[in-house]
Figure (cartoon, rainbow, N blue to C red):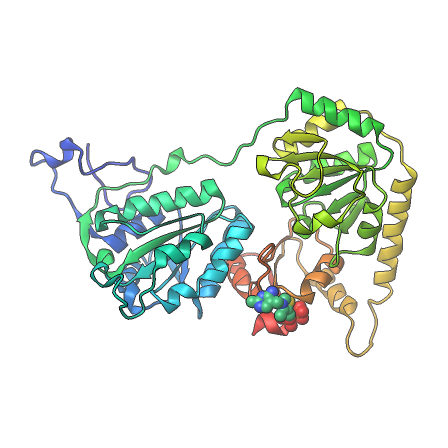
Length: 468
Ligand SMILES: Cc1ncc(C[n+]2csc(CCOP(=O)(O)OP(=O)(O)O)c2C)c(N)n1
């Protein structure tokens, strides 16, 4: 067995391996702790990292230099921007982003981005520098209890016990971030980053599998079909968990004549112009969605954990809930049929097993309500009122944006206008700060979009506060 430097996808080889240590066939190459960390990133196919330098991260900056041909360093002006950019990366691409900050104040600046990722169930890794191990816990310059502070802001947080452990911990952080769907934090003491260790760790990258959720049980499909048959006015209410199931959602709406309602983060899963799409329910959403939800007697609730949903739907409406997380069933509304399953698979099974329905009076009213609402919004598109109305601005955006544009949306009234007025279609993508809803998300997310989609048009949509 041999050890290789800078070769991707090699199997894990530990220094305890006697084949390596004994005999004179191989002299172990040395690598700094920080370089070993970058090797792990490279092995995980990470080709850029967001961050802002600091003295406690000098070993990391040295590694940034050493790895500059393979891992691009994107220097942000504030660590929070780097953390938000890293969070936006998975939201846009499904691939984890990485950021770093130096000890003390640099570390503290990461929190908003970490909470954004934690609340929106977004894998990412933050590398946080720490003061040297010999200076920890004695009120040293820029020192605080990083492991304790970052525990709550992350889904996994570790400081290696020795420098040799750095690559193993970095690899584990990436695994845990993907598996636990949230931010993992790796704390690197200044002395460990510089220390030379054996260059013998390679990532088992090919063993990584993409999410693959189960199909629904036969009984749950039968129960769901029965409720659908009995219902007078079924609707579907979906969220981000239905991402990728757009075709099934539309087929469901057409076959069962169910108006479509979403959480804000569900916007875009089905194109805005789909006739049965009523939009987002709630204060930022349009009127038809708000009105329809009052009259339903059956909600097909798909991958949706909107905190505001406790306020919607008649209390006695029945619910068929589809989710991949057992903790979500019955959390926001009483549930009659729980389907622990992939949204696409569950909807497909119900569509195939269920009988086509006729248009109900509510369905007809919903379609008419939506047409009426669209006409009302459109009537303002040429308005020259002062202060300026949002409709003319969004009319321009709708006309100008490319079919594969990416929209990085900040937090504020921009969400109301974006939710109601942007007509998402084709391969357009968008992202915002969802449950944490932090201002300042738009610019870092646009930076990420421009980095990961260099050939696409990127729009940052922000109010003046978020932009500042
Ligand atoms: C970091 C942060 N601070 C405060 C808030 C509370 N907040 C939400 S929206 C908003 C105003 C946003 O104003 P602006 O950036 O001008 O955006 P607009 O409302 O015009 O879209 C505030 C203060 C927040 N969500 N995040």
